[in-house]
Structures are given as structure tokens and as C-alpha cells.
Length: 353
Image 1 (cartoon, rainbow, N blue to C red):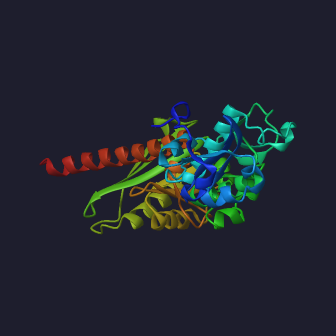
Image 2: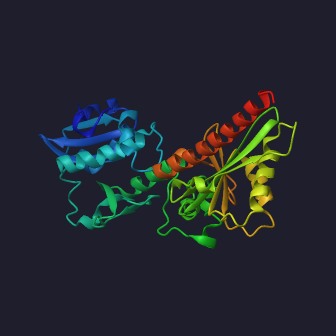
Image 3: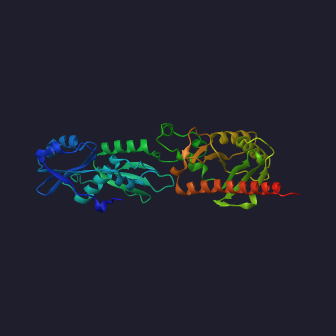
């Protein structure tokens, strides 16, 4: 991987060969008698350079660096899963690094730091990304400085379309978090207001079913308290629905039987092994019970997490690592427990009495 310390130097051309500049994304600079006058970024280097008519009159040589996909890996802290093919973002970061390194005369003409722009990334479980002039908050990391605020906004706008991220200052919780904002519906936010609320839950339950063509079907309930399995609250079910290989119906039976036991403390969060159909079955089974738990379902194929009250699933990989690991552990433990009981019943069936 290419890093900032090994970044290529500018490729320089004389000013009269401006027509040979590339029409690609990258960083450019103006130089006169060995002094770097100005550094900028552009989606089209040649056309952008032509617009600097005032500085061109002071320039002998024009330098450029075309950005490629390698530097994009440096952005992993900007958003949960940034698109690696983002040369515009690479150019943005490279511009900031080079300005800091060379201190070009016309970039640093603004002596007041308030005139510079920085990207702020809060050090939270669900980071907020924003543009600021200030860099004093110890709970926030900063990238910059940048001098072109308009260009910075446009770049982050494009990044948000490819890799949704949070911009709201405060995460709503409780009833306020039931409906995610417009950005979520536009596909440009992961609705961490939902996650921040439901994943603070201390008591988690996960469910799975296991059967072979409907035979000896079993269901499992595993319980995690404060992120750790509590086997005192594990339960297993011998499913009464027989000769019908219908996982959704079997799951509904398991949950309906579980909810009839209020002496088993109801959880804060329920995780189902499955997708939208399993989620709907669980929600239906919960009707009529005084259940405050948020119901979720995790589909195996792409690890898509379906959440009660949310129209679209979220990729588990886009959640914080701790949440990602916890959800997988819950699902896998429920699967293991269901299979172990199913195998026990199968063996018992095969052994002659």
C-alpha cells in the first residue's frame, strides 16, 4: 500500500505546455524559481489549472500528481466502509498533506487558522463527520487543512452517496429514534439513531430452528447478558409442527411458546436467524404480549440485518466492530444450540429401544 511518506513527487511541465496536463483527477501546483506558490486538487487538472489566470502569470512550471485507488485505503477512518475506488477523495487528502508539507505562499496567505477547513470525525461508536474551522476538541480527529471549502463540501457529498455516514450532532433515542431521518431514506445515512438505541440493550436473546425435511425439528433460545452468554436462560424447544419443512412457521411456534413464559425475563433485543420473512413472523408472534424488545433478523447470505420499524436492511459490516462481532456470536450460538438438540433427537430416533 502506498502511504503519505512515499508519495510520488510532482511531474512538472513548463507553463507553455499546459495543454499536456492530464484531464484526470489529481493534485496540481504552481512553481516559480523553485518555490511552490500554490497547491490545489481537481477532478480535471488541465481545465482547473487554466482557471488560475492570476497565478499563471507568476508561474514558470506546473506540477501534477494523478491520484489512483491506493491512497483510498487511508480513508478507513472517515466512514465505516468507504469505496476504495475514489480518486477524488485521494486527491483531497493528498492536497491537505502537500499543503502542510510545502506551505505554499498563496495557500498560507490566510494567516488566521479560522479560514482553513478541516474534516472532523468524532471518536464515537457511530462517528459523526463534519466540516469545521476548529481543531480543539480532544474527542474528535481531524483531517486537513483544506483551503477550498466548496470543493471539500462537494467531495464529502460524493463520499456520502457511496459510503453513507452520520452528520447529526446528537443521536435521538427512545421514541425519537423510531423513525430515521430523510438522509436514511435517501440511502446516505445508516440510521445510527436506531442502532445507538437498540444496541445499548443489556439482555439479548437469539433464536434458530434446525430440522431435516421437517423431521425432528428443534428450536433454540440463547441469552446474552451484558455481552456474555448466560446458559441459565438457555431454552430448547421440540417443535410440535411436524412433517412440514417450514422454517418460518416453526420459528413462529418457538417464539409464541417462549412469549407465554413471562417468568423468563423478557429481553431488550431479539435476534432471529433469517431475513424479512422471519422478522415478520417474529413480530406477529409478539403481538398481544407486553414486550418492549426490538426485534431484528440477520440473514446469512450477505449478513443483512433487518430491524423492526426500519424498511431497509443494513449490512452488518457497516456497524461498529463490537456490534458486528456480538451479532455474529449471538446468531452462531443460537445455531449451535439448535443443531446440538436436533442431533440428540436424531440419534435417539435411530437407537432401537
